[in-house]
Amino acid sequence: MRTLQSSGHRSLPGELAPWFHNLHLPDGLQTAPDHPLGDFPRWKWRQIAAHLPARMDGMHALDIGCNAGFYSFELARRGAQVLALDIDEHYLAQARWAAGSLDPHERVEFRRMGVYELASLRARFDLVLMLGVLYHLRHPLLALDLVAEATAGTLVLQTLTQPGEQRVQPPHDLPIGERERMREPGWPAMAFIEHELAGDATNWWAPNRACVEAMLRSCGMDVVAEPGDEIWVCRPQAGRNGAQHERVREELRAANGR
Image (tube, rainbow, N blue to C red):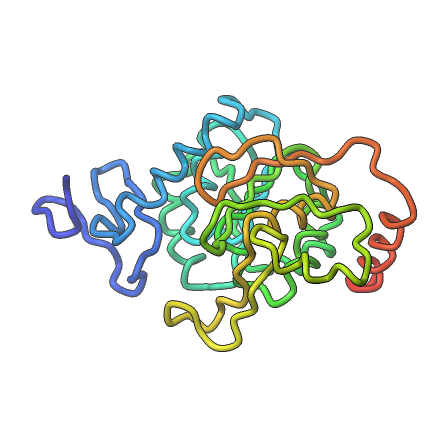
């Protein structure tokens, strides 16, 4: 494996360090060859890739929290036009620099924008990636509502979760006298992180898997596949309507200023 120090190869601009995405550049250079998670996020992409079309010509994709652009470049390689969003200008600088090598057809647009600003786009996408973002948000359900509204085809969600695989399917109407059931293992629940987790003050929430799936359903998304640990592939529910759905839409319109 060639590293940044390999003789005969260019080095990365110092101002772009450190890197969280290990990008493989055409000349053999890697941006994070000693990543503590291994060849990340390439191994995670392999889990997701089989659930996406091999060719995406004519498709429009949204990559929320794009970091240095690994997933955006992979979607562009398959032919998609990609809008890649991140709030961190450091990561966007990395992505724009790497685009010179990895996006020869200029299919990716990198933009500094947060997930709550999706309402201002008033656009829908054939494919939406939201990987490693949800637990960093103070208002996760609002964000998921906005993401679901922007998803015309497929949503791929990845998020940190609590340990455990248990899932409890809550009843349609829980009697108030049976609230103890909420303590059952696998009941949809989310832990609030007041201070820090793993030294990161932007880690706000740790949902369990049942909670992630319940939140997706409440936002109008059906889970169709789980290609890897803490990864869900989702599609919009067919024919979603009713009084509860309309209440959610009213709240969403109020929150996003529409």
